[in-house]
Amino acid sequence: MAAPGPEGTPRRGFDLAALLAERGAERYELHARHLNHQLPRVLRTIGFDKVYERADGAYFWDADGQDYLDMLAGFGVMGLGRHHPVVRAALHDVIDASLADLTRFDCSPLPGLLAEKLLAHSPHLDRVFFGNSGTEAVETALKFARCATGRPRVLYCEHAFHGLTTGALSVNGEAGFRDGFAPLLPDTAVPLGDLAALERELRRGDVAALVVEPIQGKGVQEAPPGYLRAAQELLHRHGALLIADEVQTGLGRTGDFYAYQHDDGVEPDLVCVAKALSGGYVPVGATLGKDWIFKKVYSSMDRVLVHSASFGSNAQAMAAGLAVLSVIEDEGIVANARVTGDLLRTRLAELVDRYEFLAAVRGRGLMIGIEFGRPESLVLRGRWTMLQAARKGLFAQMVVVPLLRKHRILTQVSGDELEVIKLIPPLTIGEREVDRFLTAFTAVMDDAHAGGGLMWDFGKTLIKQAVLQR
Ligand code: PLP
Image 1 (tube, protein in one colour):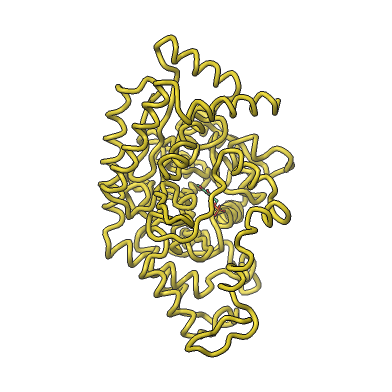
Image 2 (spheres, rainbow, N blue to C red; image 1 turned 180 degrees about the vertical axis):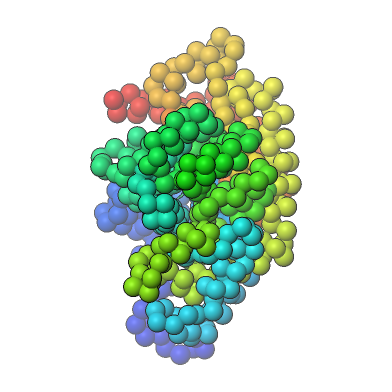
C-alpha cells in the first residue's frame, strides 16, 4: 500500500521512501548488474562495502548507528560537510518558489547574482560560464583559450588531473587514465615547476594555454613558490594563457579562497571552479575569465549559443552556489581551513620522527598529503621492499583500510601507485576531528611498525592479489 503523503493525504504514484525501504538492501547487487561492475568488486575486496544510512556535517552513520568521520568529502564536493542547513534551506526555497527556470529565452537573476559574487573573489576577471561539473569547467577553459588565441595546442603538467571527458583527458598527466581513449587533442606535458621546459614549448608558437592545478590532487604536489607568476609572464610574452584549475583547491580548501592567490601577482586568464560550489547537492561547474576572451568566443549574435549547456545555470545549482558563498563568508570557512589545516599538518609532521614508515607531510589548508617511504631498520625495510615488489601504493592502501574498518575514518590513497594518503575533509572540521584522526592514525602506525594486526593481514591479501593480476 502507498505510504501517506503530506498532511496524511494518500500518496499516489512515485514514493521514494517506500522504494528505498523495499529495495535499498539490493544496492551492491544492483550496481554490479547495471552500473560499473568493478566498483562493488573493489569495495568488497578492501572491506569497504558498507551500508551508510545517513549523514550530517563531517560524519555518516551505518545501520548500527556507528559514526564514521569523513576525511574525503566526496572527493571534495562536500566542502561545507553534508546537508549544511543554509544550503538545504536555499534548495527547499528555490524548489518551492516554482520559478520559470531554464526557459532558455530569458535572463534569470540567479546566475547573474552568483557570477557577481564569485567574481568578487577574483577582481581581475569579468565573466562566468556555468556548466555542470569540473571536467566541463575545464573543457570550457580549453575551448575558450583555443578560440581566443587561435592556437591549437594545450600544455599541462605531468601527473595532472583535470577531469575525464575527452578534452580534459587530453591534459591528464597519467597514462592509466588515457590508455584506450586515443587520439586526444594536440597536447604536451611539462614537469610542474620547470620553466625552461615551458618556454621551450612556447617558442613553437602554437600554444593556446597552460592548464595547471596550483596544488596537484595527485600526491598533493604544490607548484614551487613563484612558479605560477613566472609561468604567467612567460605565457603572456608568448601570446598564450594561464588556466588555473581550482576545481579541487578553490573555495577555501587551501586556506585562501583560491590556491593561486597564495603567490603574489598571479592573475590567471581563466579559472575553473566546481565541486564544493553547490554544497554537494547539485552538479555545477564554473569557468571564470577575462572579458576579451568571452568576447572572442561570443563574437556575434550568431554565436550566442556557440558554447552552452542545457542544464547550465539551473536555478537549484545557482541557489545552492549563492548559499555556499554566503556560508563561506558568514562562518569564516576559509580561515577555519587555514587554522585547522595548520593544526592537523603540524601535529602530523611531529610524527615523522617517530615512525620510520612516515616520510613527509605536505599541503596547505585542509588539503594534506601524508607520504610513506622506505624505513631504515632492517626488519621494516624487508617488509617495505616486499610490498614494493608486489605493487607500489600497497602500503598506503594498507593504512587506508584499517583507518576505515577499525577506526571508522574514510580517507583515500592519492592516486595509483603512490604511497601517499590525501586528506580533503569538509572545511568545517575542528579540533575534535583532528584529535580523532590523529588518535586513529597513530594506532595504525603503531600496528604497522609492530608488524601485526589487521594491517599486515590485509597486506598479505593485497600482495597475493597484486601478484595474481600480473
Ligand atoms: N579538475 C580537478 C583539479 C579535479 O580534481 C577534478 C576532479 O577530481 C576535476 C577537474 C574533474 O571534476 P569532475 O569530477 O566534477 O568532472
